[in-house]
Image (cartoon, rainbow, N blue to C red; front, side, top):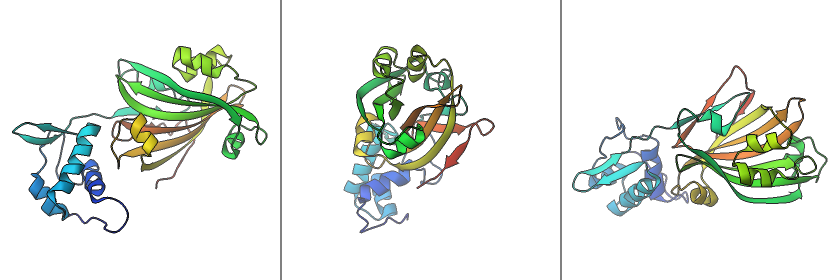
Length: 251
């Protein structure tokens, strides 16, 4: 039996879902059938209602599928490989894995830069920055949600450009940045927030990969600081160690 942590504040059904999601069930592979609810309940030491709640959440997330009269199966969902290197780009990074790639602007506003943003962009404290909230999809599935910041003095119309292009790269090109490179990327894993659940169509307990990155122009000047959340069940981050400086921290 896989032990669950009781009296931790984390619902038991979420813990069961996490263990299934993380392939703790020995030998379970794509298209394999899950053990019966009663067997899972015994294995985890919970009642069948708890198991059903876990399975329902994973079905909603697309990890499992129920087939009438046959049982519940693990879906064969190959994760997209998203490369992080010197020239990290959403569209080109997935061009051989997804037919349609798109970006949508959720909101934009001009704000005084938070300390981490002004530091990343080498701006004076409280300098004006444009904050964009976006979500990117591949073949209709939401892949990542992001918050990005740009120097308002230099990129005053970045929101309008992104609305028209759906691409940070294309938007920067319109504003005179024909090429840029990734200066740094930090990665950590965490449970999805309520906002992540909504934007990425995930179920409670899902894991997201959070990246914090700084991009610079050809002169080495920071042009974008971004914080992106990737659905861990749909994307794996492929680190190009030959060309990128990456610091990692995992919770």
